[in-house]
Length: 360
Image (cartoon, rainbow, N blue to C red; front, side, top):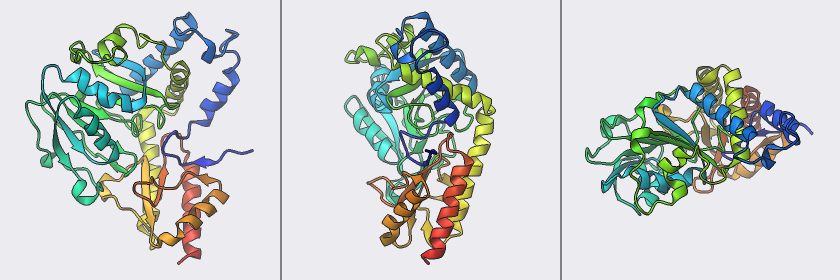
């Protein structure tokens, strides 16, 4: 049976090359006689897998030496609590930018540990844009400034890096990490759930500047203490070993593709195909401000919502799956992460043109 084009927002499509390699190695990893799922996380085989994954991620993102890379459990949601517990460092306030559902969840969690200042929001327009830098009202005494670089549900992506001055910049980069080059040195902490551009659900990657570790709140669970995890190479407890292995294969795949510079150009081409079609259409509409339209998640609506179910049914018949929008916003959403081939986006565009021609 041939594979479908999977537009799921997460868990999301993985590179076919990665899945094939994982399949070939599932019973016997490199002559070890074991699956990676069966290995001790403290054995030399898995330690080599983890070390290579970190080295490749550092190379891809050009991560400076004074940053630690952690592979943790709990996805990005666990980091909503870990960030304030590790970064408040004696301060009582933190700045947050509110651009949608995931920002709101991070804010709600942070309020358990500190006073949250909403430095900027797009709630006035139903979260269809990202506030510009000149609209942010920052607190110079904040412990950190947190923002979500790409809102998976609303399809809103920042087109700039906020400047917080001497205040550490923290970013939930779950749904656009590795989709373009970034200057890691501008950040205090970057964190990302794996299930969009990295690997299987359950794993989180955290990149943290060393000087921000070591002064966590007394209430922090040990497994969420950045310093403890860094001192134990992310292995204070048994880490998500198979997720780390798949992530490592994805990093190697990205290197073969030409790195993040090449991936950015591919993502620009893919998203342009879809947005150009939507812009030229009388049936489809993008609710997001043009300057903040995500390259990763493309929400759109049909002029006649009565056609939604028919659209989804016919798309499934064309082997185009997981296009239904999030329940909180409705409509459609096509998630076109790194692993979505250009052929998949072209197939979706062809279907959308044909559907519109038959439903004017």
